[in-house]
Image (tube, rainbow, N blue to C red; front, side, top):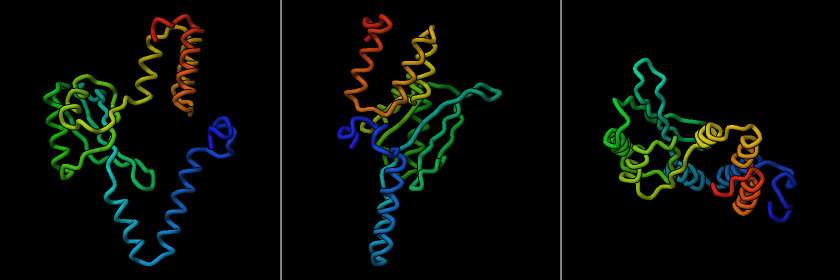
Length: 188
């Protein structure tokens, strides 16, 4: 639809509206049929693959990394399902906490992981979870980029591209234009 209407702004509803409508339709279909179908619907949601997000913060009095494991449930509400206060941010510490998490989750692997980009955490994730999609949190990407982009006229287009809902091809085209506009082609 986005390609047919030539952009998200022209389709008349948001991505969230679409997901809400699809969920409502699924729920109607599941609960308007027999009880067996309703039970199957609930079981399929209960056994769906996990997405989880790891974040570290050192804002406590001892400057120790706090690792949070968070997911989004079937109501799209945030659920914290694990917390660890580590003594350091080494690969071994992250391997320990990820193995402990896996043990508590019955060795169910996530399908995607979102982190702050910490190198030790990345190495531990690669060792423990070789298959999930590992992405860096948009907030951390934005913070890092705006630290290195010293002029506001470079920060604003970057933030726009980071958070705009566009196709991959549109992103690549706009990214190239932004680099050319600001004389940053060598940073491609």
